[in-house]
Image 1 (tube, rainbow, N blue to C red):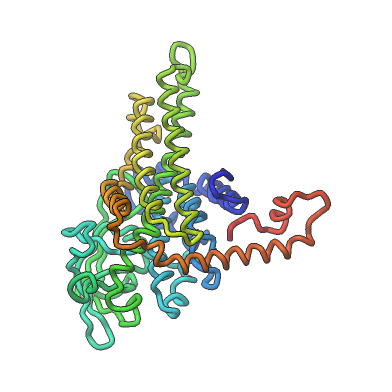
Image 2 (image 1 turned 60 degrees about the vertical axis):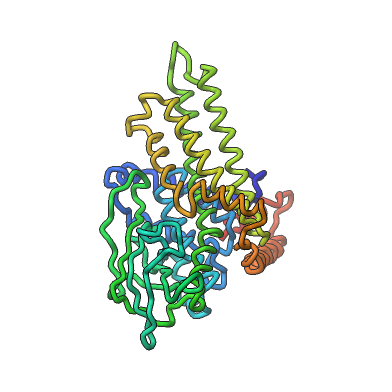
Length: 433
């Protein structure tokens, strides 16, 4: 794994998340699959690990560990339960709007609560009649004294049923400059959460509807300025939505490989393991090859993001490659399992169902291809990663400075003959926290 832009801290974090997922999440998967409803207590338990604050600055109580660390967290949760990986990524996506557009007062109020797991944020942009066409939304906010009054409906809101704070983008005027974003607390009068509906996959995760009926929100809850709503929506989608969903796909893909390899080794045909059949081995090899490529595209993209390098193309491509390859590998796995894969005592059918859920959010594969074509033709309207690169780079430099200072402080404690990595473990540096 160290070949994929990670260091010892990242791998220590990976092990910590994997141990947690195996211990706390895996025993609950069957229950979530049977109930097919939001798992409130497990969502809160994951949030209390501090992982929702992966990209929240340390000054606000977060990990300040960056997008690669965030990717590893989501990937490892998704390897065991894509539903819980989706829960974590949706809240990290919800935190993005405050990180990049929140006032100092909003950051001080909400980021520490998000980092500690006391607040699960969401972002609500999509509407039933406009879908991914953000400028087609019709929900409104009208200024009335010291408040704004919100009316409208949002759909496909990740963590809608467990969220505490919703980042809602609505119309305050016409055109692309007429969208604004607001922070709306769950329980505020005029906000109603729709009934949870059963879905194909991601059982345990909720993505539903929010209804606003003369919902009064203080003007202090406006994110940024009036007219910043499009920037809030697009930047959150590009810088967080695409890489977060990429990480969910990557976790599913890893699980597909592990389950398929195990099945091929254990299942007997003609007195030998199924893996001895050449056609089976070829399919398994394709899964392995796709996964290697998928992880490389995913980690490379978020590594560039952490470095503050413009990387919209890499982020789009990472989602495209990971979504498509995880679906292909899940289908290959189903064919290898044959009739065995149709029964729910094996997880492969769950992987296929869950993988389909990652296709549409933050842009379908066709949308990624269209945007990549615009970049190739030079007709793209700028890169969001470039617009916010200075902020990302500054935060990453501060994180690196903190790590280096801690390393310096740890050096006198090294024992004779102890390797550098062991010294960092001895000093408690291994976790990225």
